[in-house]
Length: 221
Image (tube, rainbow, N blue to C red; front, side):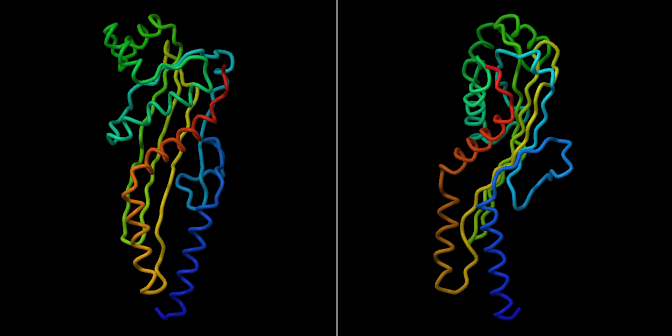
């Protein structure tokens, strides 16, 4: 590739990166023909709402353990984040710590339907929130680093497992650049390496993804 073509390619990559950084979050339903599974230049939240939620109006929801075991950090942070933002949509939310205490104290296993029904009678809670981490990627290419996190959450009725609401969203963060000269190479390496080593990136991503998910849930307070 000639030097001129390399410069043009670099400019295109930088422009694309700028578009990603400046893109706004879009919200689409699952049956929206415009939605994409992995949008390149847009942040997209895909959701579905059962109209029955407005008549049922659950007053309480319990945040269950994830369906699949996520990374240790995600396991520690996603559940509490979901409980925190869910509290802005429902009058009462039972978060992971309180749920574990109630499970142990009452000898209830929420993995099974009978256990969930017992929990509903014991606590007066009408709904439960299931969640899972679909993607947790940490990519590092010396001059560029990216983290990607995809979370899915769904709200069900405790009595009969009826689905009230579901949403999925992918969060992305990246840093680094395509070095245009030998002098810019150390700066690109520094930015990418510093991003990868930053322990605050994942908690911040989790908070952003969860907030965008829960905003699609109707306010039932």
